Length: 499
Ligand SMILES: Cc1cc2nc3c(=O)[nH]c(=O)nc-3n(C[C@H](O)[C@H](O)[C@H](O)COP(=O)(O)OP(=O)(O)OC[C@H]3O[C@@H](n4cnc5c(N)ncnc54)[C@H](O)[C@@H]3O)c2cc1C
Ligand SMILES: *[C@@H]1O[C@H](CO)[C@@H](O)[C@H](O)[C@H]1NC(C)=O
Ligand SMILES: *[C@@H]1O[C@H](CO)[C@@H](O)[C@H](O)[C@H]1NC(C)=O
Ligand SMILES: *[C@@H]1O[C@H](CO)[C@@H](O)[C@H](O)[C@H]1NC(C)=O
Ligand SMILES: *[C@@H]1O[C@H](CO)[C@@H](O)[C@H](O)[C@H]1NC(C)=O
Ligand SMILES: *[C@@H]1O[C@H](CO)[C@@H](O)[C@H](O)[C@H]1NC(C)=O
Image (tube, rainbow, N blue to C red; front, side, top):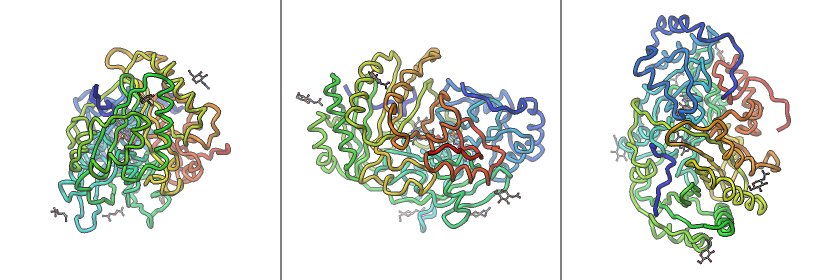
């Protein structure tokens, strides 16, 4: 049986202590309207669409929804929020697993960016100017149409470039071509004091460093400038299912995949997708089918993976494939939702003892989960990974060096997600990290813990590791009052615990 991984399929956090922001709803609305900022009328169809979270477990009510169409509108919206002491957050594709585009709690100003989605490629320099409310599929589509160019990013067309590229952006091209944020060469940012600045390697370099990994805490990006590459003529996407019916065989299989990850060639991008009903190796190879077969053969021999799909096609073909049939060119009118708990991990290569624990938990605990769960493990690092080829402090993305990146996801198709449903996946993650030194694991803010199981101090350490002190100092300089607050974001205070 062949099943494409449903990763992209359509199928209580602590409140901050400030005066009830809803008391200021009229004042905020007056300020926005008075400044000429477009807003959604509460209860209107656009209000419902723009405030509907991707994760239906985490429904939050904004005080107001601003819908800017210009950078000036964004500046004025931030000024209104700051003046009234209301927290403000940009929302781009709205695909945060923890509804951070809505602030991750009730009572924020949502700055809905998705009407700002212009993409212009300068065909002579290869630099693309991308407005801060664009979705990934739209960006990929435009770059291809305007000059057969692209950059590496995640696979779901509806995900926003704002959230995605400002916090990492690991996609099915990243082992070959790096993170989405590696392609940012400049950005225009509205700061908490409502000034607008540009940043790049040479202009406001601290801000440029900070937005590439923790952008949501620093300001609102109205425009990105991305470098691009000429897309390859031919790539080969593949699915290689495995059958590991026993713990012993799964142990052999996972161990082999982990070993393979350490030295697999740069041209190969792959993840191990462990789901309730199937286990796949799947990915993208920069080359033809014969090249892929040669590269995968040694791993197939140990894991018994069968190459069920290996299709060579052009750039948009692989985007369509990994987008699971969702239209590539996505704009404002997208309603995509799931009901789930998810969390994430990065680790180095697991020790033999940890591998055994992993497989044991999978077979003894996770398999009894009645819901539709999966754990997918991206082969993120290794000797030949473009992500790991840069230092951990080259941007705010602190976890380049880790070999493996895990998304643990547990969802329901209908009904109510149980109050304690998260424990199966959160214990899975804890089972892996238990006893590991802190420098041996981290978490990905684009795959946040969507139950707020950590306090904010711990969350910051897990997401930003050794880069946290520098980030907090920059945050203090650009947003001392934490206007762009959300419950797992960077705080403008110094964490004094040793990292
Ligand atoms: C179906 C699906 C598939 C995914 N696939 C991948 C994948 O392959 N690889 C991967 O790495 N991740 C993936 N993700 C995770 C995704 O990268 C994150 O959820 C990302 O943060 C979503 O960005 P968004 O703009 O859609 O979300 P939003 O909820 O709009 O925003 C997320 C965060 O970014 C901030 N933000 C958004 N726009 C801006 C802006 N212009 N300026 C400043 N801050 C901004 C928000 O305030 C919020 O904190 C996937 C998520 C989903 C739901
Ligand atoms: C951009 O450049 C590519 C490659 O040189 C070319 O094929 C394409 O026609 C150009 N597009 C435009 C809009 O100029
Ligand atoms: C930022 O850079 C862009 C592109 O170079 C330029 O058009 C814009 O005026 C600059 N904005 C600011 C605020 O400096
Ligand atoms: C691969 O197949 C052989 C022969 O059936 C079997 O002995 C072995 O356990 C399998 N390995 C895995 C990892 O499934
Ligand atoms: C991890 O899971 C295994 C299998 O369920 C269990 O035996 C072990 O005690 C767990 N370890 C920790 C540290 O939770
Ligand atoms: C706004 O904040 C930035 C960053 O802290 C600072 O450099 C700038 O001077 C401030 N502008 C105004 C008008 O206060």
